[in-house]
Amino acid sequence: MMPRPVDLRTLPELEARRFHDFLNAHRAEILPEDPPIPFEERLKAWRAPPAHEVSRHFALLEGERVLGLAEAEWRDDRPENRDIAWSNLVVAPEARRRGLGRVLAQALLEDVLPFGRSKLFLATHASIPSGEPFAHFLGAERGLEEHTNQLLLSERNVEYVQRALEKAPLERFELVWFDSDYPESELEALCQVFEIMNTAPRGDLVFNDFQVTPDQLRQEAENSHQNDRGWWLLLARDRQTGQYAGFTEVGWHQNRLTTVHQYGTGVHPDFRGHGLGGWLKAAMLERILQERPLVDRVRTGNADSNVPMLRINHSLGFKPFMARVEWQLNVKVALEGLRARAGVLG
Image (tube, rainbow, N blue to C red; front, side, top):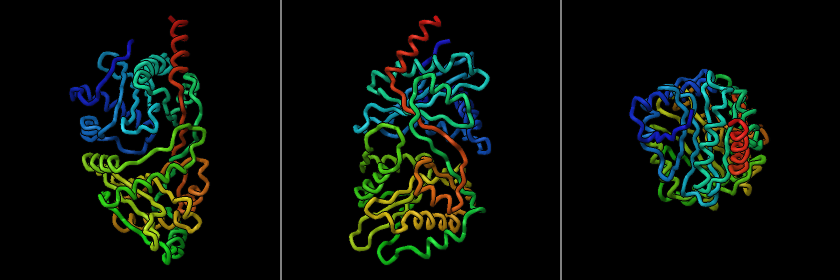
């Protein structure tokens, strides 16, 4: 059984639905309580991917049944990390332990190397125990332990929220909201704000600080609008200098209005120690409660080593929801190992 390249942008609708069903089955393994992604939503995203996104896919099929899918993607407008791609490999539960993951991985690695992508990042989830042994099999190095943490709004710490709002340093800072829009006049400043996330823990993952450009923010906003995603960005601004000191951002999809995802929260190192992180998250939570009555939960990803942010999240009432590990893989080294095994097996 040989992997075949797949272009999700141009697949006939009937074939695209098979891959859609396969990915929804995988989603159910990781998020068994969540609703499936509607076909129309996923097809729209496949047909019109974000600008500058490059993706490569290989599939294993048995007749019309999808048994496995491997993918790698990167942006060609991020020169600071030209050697990196983000990857994912899924094999149907009933087809595991048949060597299909090895075959898919080799096809994908052979494909991305000529693009200069010599390092892959991949993730494994605790809900799929076979993922971690396979990462070891490929020779991947453990990079970062993390959790998705979830806050059920009915279980929020009301006292902590009120206290964070009451103690807000209003004499020095003010809050600024942008709703599903990045104003053109603020793009340069917002780029600097989002680059605060370069200070977040990375564990043993090795990559250069990412750079954010106005064009990237424009493209991300356009893609979100096209794919029915909304977001709120909340910033703390120094009243004297006008500098943005910190931010938090949440988003949602119109097909899943009960769940809000908190994408990132960060405070510039020069402004830490003023309680801005707790204030920003509490203010965002209050607005969600007031203006989005269908929401019953908020999810956010945190490195297990990010003690300051975890302290705030746990105080708000967030609890561990899903464990995962980020891995990094040297493409050349992994290929040498896979080719050697293929020679032995062949």
